[in-house]
Image 1 (cartoon, helix red, strand yellow):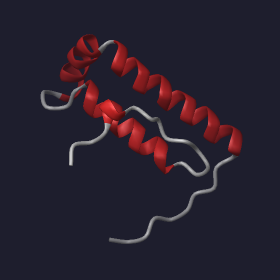
Image 2: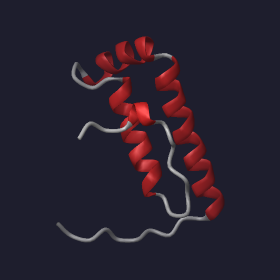
Image 3: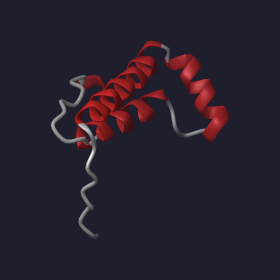
Image 4: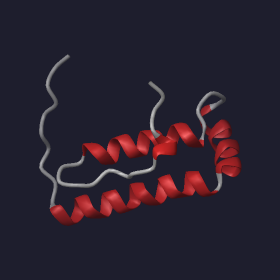
Length: 78
């Protein structure tokens, strides 16, 4: 595995990106049924709202100088 290449990002853009990711995670948590149906139609079975929320939270945690979302119900399975 190669080391990730750092990509500079403006602090304001990083904040907006984290806010957008938070919106998507909140949307997944607030309407899992409709999100599951939409995801099934878009990507097929096997990827649901909880999977998307976990991916979004993981991505947000990779952004520099940001606080990842703190929702234990969305933690990835061990």
